[in-house]
Image (cartoon, rainbow, N blue to C red; front, side):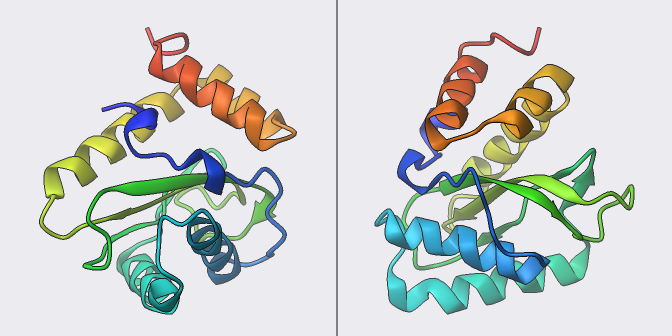
Length: 157
């Protein structure tokens, strides 16, 4: 699975303004609403589902990266977005603040897609160059280009 299979490029946010975990999750879900990928009346329910998932254990996986995600019946296909923050406390495994956020919402009846997307994200994020370039991105176009390059195997060997 590639980023282009599930990332909504209209929802990419290069400058998240919220300064806490729930705030950035709300901001990213809102960007998916604004892009037409999620219905406005499902926004609060999706944010709550993601926060409930966070209670099980932080999706802050370390090295300044978090992958908040949930399965939700309001979506009929996997949808995701990327956001960049100056640094948010996410209770990450390494205790560091998070700058890169990959948010995923998938239908409950498609667990394979959900797992493949998470696998793709984690594989790409193991590449230090990819992470560094993402953190330095100044706008959504830069981020989109990096995701396309990652899809074309220009980072991970």
